[in-house]
Image 1 (cartoon, one colour):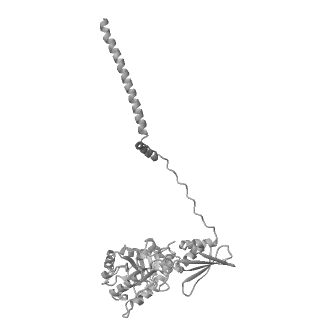
Image 2 (image 1 turned 90 degrees about the horizontal axis):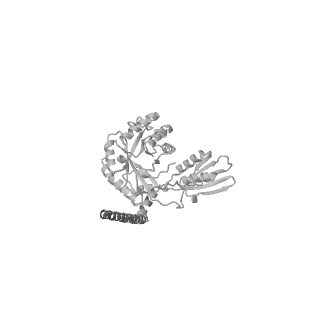
Image 3 (image 1 turned 60 degrees about the vertical axis):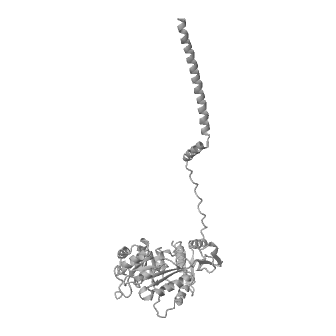
Length: 399
């Protein structure tokens, strides 16, 4: 029996030794794994990954509120200065001089961007809305300076604002701009239209809606990428002898009538960017009619050019009061004379002087003579340094 027990004891010792070796192996593996994880945790690749996770988990920082802009002290001088700044007049050009109970302020405006009448209107509108009393308004003989006298609220001093075109060259010199509008298109067959559309300068075309050739001319102009205006028919002082035609604006119209008429005109020429009056020697003198007209055009995002049929037209001023893009004709171009001199016509444009944005209006059928003559004048204007532009590219400051 002793002989049989010996192998069993031997196997028992062998098992103990095997279990010891397994334990040592596992311990060694654990130590190796521990150091491997430690190395991995400190490696660059792992750090980048963990950094990225950390960044994604960062709490979003709330920006500190910006400090509010420093407001000028509420004084009459600063009220006028604020208006001047809105007209983009540099503070260094703002001059003030007080003598006794009168304060004289000089405001030189940029002739390339502003009209004296608009600046006058803006100062008057802004200051009277703050309780200032307008005492008087004067213009010098040459029309280059306007003087406004005010009394601020609760003040005894009189403030005189002198607005004039800057001649000190303090404003950047800009290339003069000219926009030519060829108007009254639609009634007659414009046989030379294709040639005009090939002129290498921007031109603008005003088309009367609901006329015999309206649609054909409209489509041709659109293809050429020229700008289209609606030549809005309005009642003439000689109506009905001179008829403004279908959907024209009449002085007997109600607000609803005007909205409907303009809606139909816009449907006829939907790609038009703006408008200019056709006829209208009576309608453009009626304040209520013009008010409803400008309100409607503004809602449709259309600008207005006052063709100034009568000198008494209030269309432009009404458009300005409605704070919409609006312009006035600078010159009517007539090349129909058999003795026409292009240099004389060029001088008419150059002599418009201080206004660096010129709008020239002409009628092709009986005002332009030949196509060659018109093209020759455009070439001279171009060589004089003028930039031909679309009406919608003209500078127009709105408040």
